[in-house]
Length: 114
Length: 112
Image 1 (spheres, rainbow over the protein chains, first blue to last red):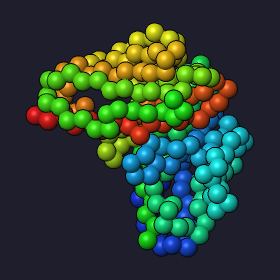
Image 2 (spheres, rainbow over the protein chains, first blue to last red; image 1 turned 180 degrees about the vertical axis):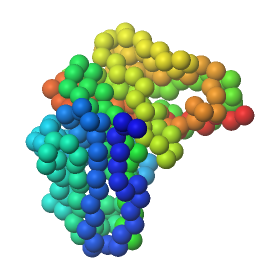
Image 3 (cartoon, rainbow over the protein chains, first blue to last red; image 1 turned 90 degrees about the horizontal axis):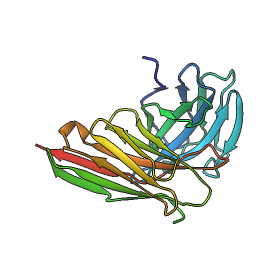
Image 4 (cartoon, each protein chain N blue to C red; image 1 turned 45 degrees about the vertical axis):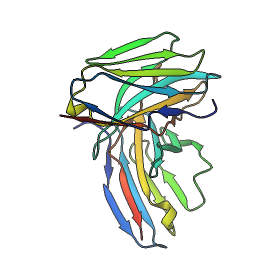
């Protein structure tokens, strides 16, 4: 399967713990995006990488959130000191620079903070 | 329109019915409109990317139209089947930007 993969698919944690999610994009794609979806809402943009450079961050991304893409391939999203409001589906997408720039999504990581 | 809005929020149809959904988006600084289908426990699947006013795209029984001047897009499903049951999301991409702004989706349930 050459699609976008995310790990883990589900994560349950206690408030105050740190969690890290991984995203493996489609191999030839230079752009990688993180989105978050909460109940009843559409996905909301968090951050975007072109190769290893983080080019844009949403105001939704508080200081407790950090994302990296160290070698321009896979990416990690870390949440420190999790809060119940962080419970959401975290989606990763990748794309190749082009006219349409279609973003291809992974299946997401469902985070539940108790 | 300041945000991306979709209607209806949910829809129940019978197998064989044709149906359509609406997506409204900001028409200023528009670059592209994306449609996705998202089935439970799967990845959102890209259906269409539309950029030109008056554009129409088709994929099997699903088609979409685009009006960039008034800021809306319609998604049509002809002869709905149970496997069409999913949430259909639209997302707007502005000129000069890379992030997608999504609507809240239309949840379609096709019953036998």
